[in-house]
Amino acid sequence: MELRRADIIADALEELVFTGGFHDGDRLDELRLAAQFDVSRTPIREALQRLVASGLAEQIPRRGVFVRQPGPVELMEMFETMAEIEGVCGRLAAMRISDAALEELDSANASCCAAVEGGDSDGYYRENERFHHVIYHQAGNGFLEHEALRLHRRLKPFRRLQLRWRGRLSQSMAEHEAIVEALRAGDCERAAEALRGHVAIQGEKFHLLMSSLRSAAE
Image 1 (cartoon, rainbow, N blue to C red):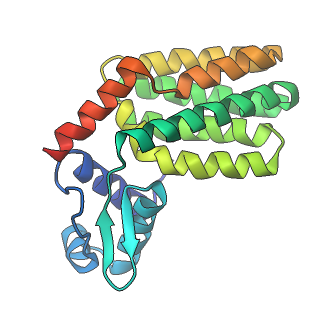
Image 2 (cartoon, one colour):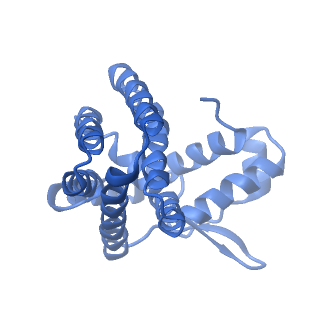
């Protein structure tokens, strides 16, 4: 899957935020970033808008775009909401999913498996996005799909970060397989529970995420 230049830059900026290259409150200057990445300002603007959409940056009129790290309560609430939305999508999709969509999920899972074998967490995430988007669409509810996509974009940098934890790629892959099995069986409750558990951040997983964010801020 070919990435647009703006997406490549957005991924790099997220990485800089998480590794301490930028800190909370830092201004993301378009001209400096254009020179840094050797591009025009257009892909920089698009990349910054992706960071704003995910909540990792804030746009202030007449001042510019600034790094914004969400607090632990806000982050926990967003993941809690996302888990419940994914569960509803799974429940509805188990009743409505087409054979073609199941094949698409199998294809996404095959690509995810190749990324696991290659230790490519970013490649895994791109196919993981495709996997989840298919399920949102197969829920057959346009409003729900829109809300799922909106919050998915908001949490994208944090979900990508989680995949770098030791053992998380293989664990996520196993969860994907369980999700497809439940959808193929038409088991609404099992699909809902599998998706909810796949996305939820609780206990040790939340501690790991916050530790990662704290390390980047120091």
